[in-house]
Amino acid sequence: MNGSRIAAVGHYQPAKVLTNEELAGMVDTSDEWITSRVGIRTRHIAGPDEPVDELAAHAAAKALAAAGLAPGDIDLVLVATSTAVDRSPNMAARVAARLGIPSPAAMDVNVVCAGFTHALATADHTVRAGAATRALVIGADKMSEVTDWTDRTTCVLVGDGAGAAVVEADPSSDAPGIGPVLWGSVPEMGHAVRIEGQPARFAQEGQSVYRWATTQLPPIARKACEKAGLAPEDLAGVVLHQANLRIIEPLAEKIGAVNAVVARDVAQSGNTSAASIPLAFSKLVEQGQISTGDPVLLFGFGGNLSYAGQVVRCP
Figure 1: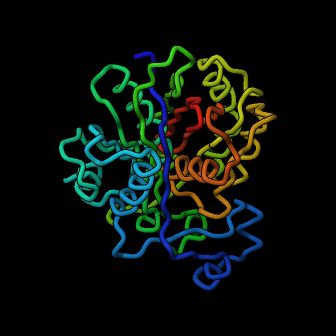
Figure 2: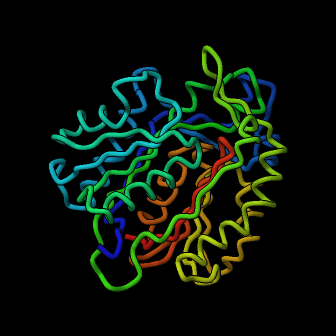
């Protein structure tokens, strides 16, 4: 096969919305403090009876429906998450069971905030190699479960949710629907973003992450465009990991995608880790802000410090 493409996308967020004003009643903060520093106004929070695989299954079911496919059409399920509580069965197997997918290869991918773009690249490689026909690629995280709600530096950031994409072979002779991935990491700085301990808790070194993201990542993102045969100004959309607006806006500007719609879903959804890119991408598609065939840069970064980016064609 010449490549693969995204046939459809879908997303899901829990019903409960937590506002900055409500957070101010829980911890020493304010709406002004949060919006001025990270640009987040609301976030969705899953209840104790809403596990990660349920969030993932809702998003995946929407992507399947949008693609006009049945569960039996899927033979690979990849779930990017870093908030799975149990070691086994993994989230991918649980999602497959919820959806009734009969006998897929089922794997979890834990690359934290860059998890979805890593999983998407893995699905692309697998489909192109002929080892799978159609794949469900899902990013899902329940960050509220690993958050210290007394720490105002982290609790104001997080939200819960899921996003999904159906990936299938693209036999066309034109540019493939999923471009070559550019990925890597800075392992010696992996401590800058952590989910560690018993119970596991999210922590980060915010200034280190900010400097790395805004100075080291722009040339890497531009190179991802180059690998797809495009200049940044050719992009119709840019979907970065929705960390916070203070990272998204300067990073997007330095990439040079002057004609692109830049996803800013973080303002409504918070940082949903591996879910953030497919969630924001699905919303841009649903809202008609990008059109079928448009080139869109997806670029994840965060824990480890890992990054992965590729240009995809809008379904």
